[in-house]
Image (cartoon, rainbow, N blue to C red; front, side):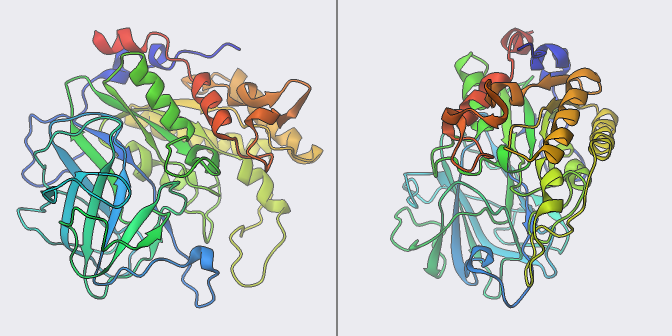
Length: 425
């Protein structure tokens, strides 16, 4: 399998210094700082219905403290927290926000961590449809270490959007402000989504940058091990660090169920619509790895459901439709000066009509030279005897989503030859 080197194709530009987008920069930010996104997630709206199944019911957060665990993939000497009220209809009000090194589970390091401020104030109100960066917080952040972000919520706050598949246990407290608590005693509630906090950026060493992985559940890490960071972008970040490259963050912007071309009541905006907000506007992002299209191919065949139909619209797509969508994403990346690498669609045990679409799409990704490079995830995971199926050792059991071993194999498929040398130039 021949895969164009990610770093070599991007050249020195992959590792060059970026200025922070003025649209999201916090007031009073030091102009000499080099902000790079070290951790991120993408939000999706929660269907607003009275008859939601338990899987789509959000935790009760009003007047409680939400503690979320994140793992930055880049070190820095100060940090900013990015909040989003993208899908809110009312203000997002946080009365106290803190960040501390996690001490395992819901526990945080002694001392309550650092208070997060916004324009010098400890509380913040984010208007509906808006996003906001915190003031810089002076604290050393270590790549690969867990951090607890604790938010004491206003008394009438409710959850209307989330990142639904976090593969990470997060926590909600009994009523009251427990943001500074070091112990886990108050945090008896558990949930496996991310809420409001959609990014953590660090003031990193000059030349540091970020690679964004964006796509559907296979990037999101569906069916990977809980709390162990076994998604393929996690494994890729560890490969980079293990190679000696400590100047490149890897951030995960996958959304389970997401499609390239169509919005969903449950699975977020179509990637062609969310690509700019979720990937291109992140501080420090200079390359994107794109893997999406299986849900577009599959959802036309999903049965319509009464009540909540997450697969609506059941739109049929052709290979040409998907290629046109990829071309829109590529054009947006070009305008932003960001390199984009196409991931081939992985085996999914599809019937012949849908498998033919997948094969045609993969042939175009490999041969068109439309992308800046290709990551052949299909070749990395397929069974040589049955190329339309995952190798058994890489199959989580549903014949679509990889196992932890499969996600590790995907990370190995991303060539990093030349990345370390390019970063040191």
